[in-house]
Length: 339
Image 1 (tube, one colour):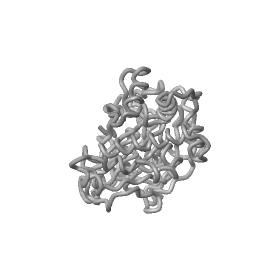
Image 2 (tube, one colour):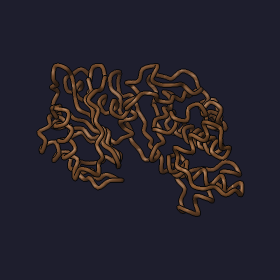
Image 3 (cartoon, one colour):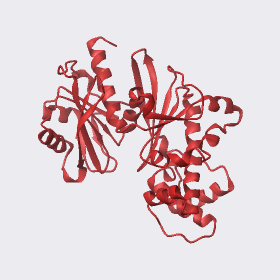
């Protein structure tokens, strides 16, 4: 669900069509100013969430630091957005959307789930801001899926409502059960289950998941391995200095392919499956030689459908900021009677 306090949404903007948008996670809050015509962003500033008692405090800090008026504001946030009351999952901030709007005198204030914002960013992407990984041509009016591996595993969808309006569908698909399909994957499943009980897709397809996979695969081969962080595993795999790291990354891509293919079938996303998040772009040189696309298409009687659906890796910087800006723009245009 998207909650945007729509009853009080104003359609006016400054002549320069600027707004303030933010992408807020459990650790950092990234703010910027965005031009809602060109989607160019500037005045980017990142704040440590732990340094501020409330969301309102960090918004005031941005306004004072950048000398930017807070009138039209939209934020993407890493937690469910289902009502006026917001409680962050991995941070202590809790706030009322209406309360923040009133306290700061905002004309518009929209709050989106972070992967609803990631889904909205798809319509802002230029051709050189995405890399196609297999499949055919995307169908412009068909649903889209977005999956992103980073600190966790985010999932969202996008559907077209009309010629000029799209709707993001946030979800918690990253917490669906992980389904092993090979003997090695069953061994990996047992390794994770011994630690966590239930094994979700996010347990593997994330930064912490990459670290766990490294140890699980070592255990499968009967090898001793010291824990490494995800960045180190990625670097070792890329430079070819560690066969275990390379096998770990290959397994990551194989499992991501299976998961992304499942998403494609769930909503028949002939508009494409977009890969966001911080991990995949850094490991992109290894993706082409992995099992990602093979596993994406390995869907039994529905292979033909899966083979036709394109995947894209998002190269654009700050897609969440652009996505939440796109949502605000769409809402304002609808109020003006343009949509």
